[in-house]
Image (cartoon, rainbow, N blue to C red; front, side, top):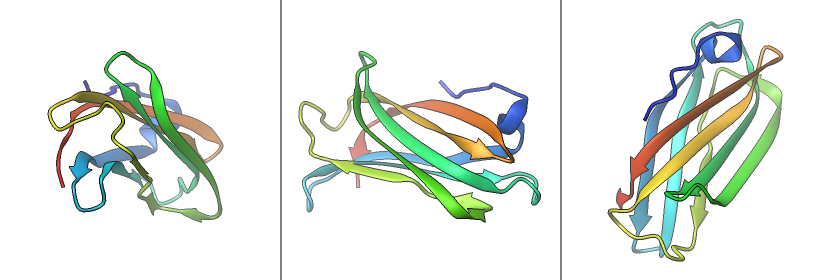
Length: 114
């Protein structure tokens, strides 16, 4: 399910390229996406990424404040599989700040192979 919230910073950024996969060479589950401003004046000053299992429990998260504001960032997480495997449903969540406004998007994903 794609997040369709509008207004605030959600109107200033777009999230694309969601990817959740199992990397057998490294033995990790990877989650990533790209956050891009839709308006060149809406610089991104913070970005966070969370990986939740299908029951809603957060398995991993990260957040970074950006001192040099960016127009595009690609947050990523790598974690041991634990109980996750290819074919499992997860929820990716990205949040942060752009132009002093908070943004939040979530996306249901199925873990594939990298």
